[in-house]
Length: 318
Image 1: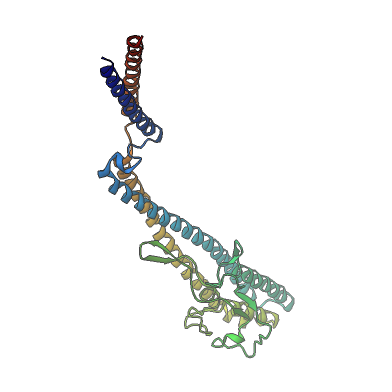
Image 2 (image 1 turned 90 degrees about the vertical axis):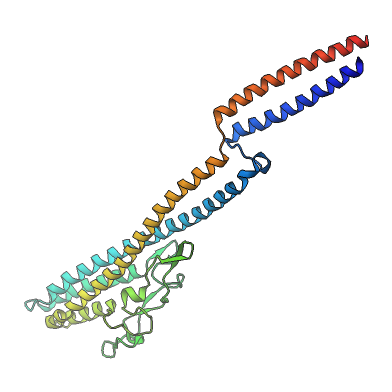
């Protein structure tokens, strides 16, 4: 009889341990909201769960990269919008200066305005974001534009950068980002293409390109020489300068639109991936709570029976 009671007691103890273990697992499910917390919970679900998690992490990285690219493009666009306004102001002053009725004093006042405009353009071309030069290409720690102390209007040659009034010190490499596997896009424009019309950075103004600093310098010189005809002859160059900035800005705008579309697509994909992960991994919380209640009831019953068996064993011993 005692041997039978001992066996029964051990069986009940084992059942209590099993129930307690299941109860712990169920409470873990309810706490985490996940029905699969380790491979043994559902071996068939592990592979799709790990695959979904991997794709979600990769998608997150590309979304973050895309956000960074959009921020860079938005920043560059803001500065280029300012450049467009600078050139509009310069065109207005140049139109005034092309009027033959202007006297020398008025022309000098206009020349001072053009000098201020050129200084403002130089400051914008050397714009920094978080200590990095925006329009220097990969040489973001190098001030991209500096005035040429050796500039001489009599020896200026568009094909020889050493004669330009403002020198470019950066390179021709626009910043690019990988926004999808194997897909890269430019998120900046280089100062050589924007401001001196030398897109390949070979030291010569390209055919159809415009050295904006040279144009402003020449307009200022013509105004100080009280030469409205020379000012008028340079109005077309200002239009070319504005077109040059517009084309570069439009290119960056197209890139921003492409990134924005990619970002929207990635956000949709992320939702789909989260749903796939949830289907394999997430627990039914209502069912988990019900299971916990049932196991707690079973545990209490097992404990009660075990206590009674233990009492009977003591009485038999006595």
